[in-house]
Image (cartoon, rainbow, N blue to C red; front, side, top):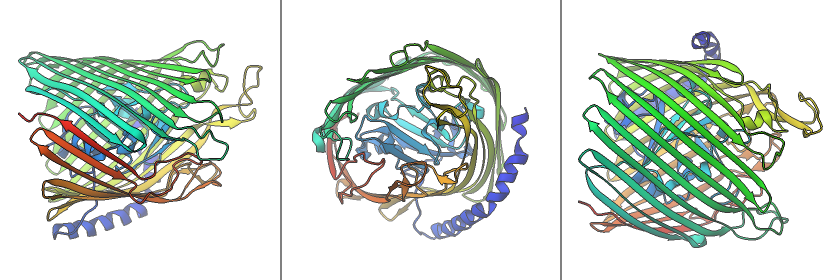
Length: 635
């Protein structure tokens, strides 16, 4: 496959990047030596990963963390609960390599930038079900994914189109809901916070014989604050109300076969400001359904067959706008383990459908499909680890696209590993970009080539890593004002989407965790340069530097901690004229068990009441407090 052997171009990019990498690795070596003598480290995942932990997202197979070459972070339920966060993006923004923006309060339009790349370049899955919107540029609906129903998050930084296909240009975020375990585990929780915020949740999980189950329900809301800060904006309060539910049912037919079904549902109503007098509302519904059959045919061979569907429905009122995206996927995944080798082969079909006729009455409901073959080979031999992947996608609209990746890891000393990887990726134009009056049916896929180097160190509860990366994007789809490359017509606006842009995302991510006496330290530092190569301008709403640093410890029966989030200067416009100043936030949290089955969590965010903006003229919360009480019997 020609794209799989793209190394000459990647090497050229890599040579230009080696000086940056060398500086990163030299700094890392110094820090690592200090760590072995009891020094302090920065953090990797909000906690040091357990080496026995299993990761699914890196290669779409269950892998021990020791075999994973990719740059991965893990967030568990305990971390989510201690965060006191209102949305998924707030949790992700505390991880290495992740930034977020939001146009107002919870429930409003939210973007997540992974390694400085546009939010559309991150593929999102819930229990293996693809979540996406074919409206606009194809951004995942981060604000619609209910944090209350999430048990675990895996974040893969770096392109993964050779495994997942279109969209995985900057990385993949996989979200998992709860799975039942032996016994019965009910829970009930309530919480109150600033802005008259309230939350309630209840659920039960368990397993009996061959059946396991998990059900969860939550409802939360807030009076909120005005979404916009400019003088002409509507001063009304833009609150939100969200109802969510999740379910998982598994049936172990016998030792070799398992059936599993999953469900996630979220319905939200949130305020935003467009009209100076009307109460503008976002109405969003997100739903995922999945059914999978797992078969272990022998110790060496197993398969997984799955069918899934997701719906992303977005509506505004009183202004009339409605868009409805449905994605249906079919996957047959095979794994063969031959000694130290793991071979994978997958057949996948994805069907996208967009209904946008409320806003474009002349636009028909549009559909497209991908058919794909993906192959993978992994080897763990002594100090060496190698992973190769290749995938060919056949799109019903623009034809075929082949992507590939190669990763190598070398354990050059005890607790140390060096890694190198290169890969190609692509993102297909959305149905909106092709077929609305803003669109162009001849748009080409956006293409990327990525090269990165890294070093990881881990010993017990301490870890440290540095990853230097360079991701180059061609045929970047942007909106062009005026006739531009689009033919004028009576039903076309004076402008359209066009495949004319180029961008480059490069940087270094430092991360780690360390326990110093009774104090756990964690943090990350990102030095990056997300750039539009056509204008040589910094990409909008992304900082050149951002960092997180935190610590927690036990005081009597309490776990208490503090966290600092810092971001450098950003720009709100492509021309880099509207400056968003840098900011530093201090957050405090505490939790304890009042009794065996009762837990209290308290959090004070933005303790210094810092005024800052993630998007120009859009409000952010000042100092805010939240306290939650949860009952979960310990058997």
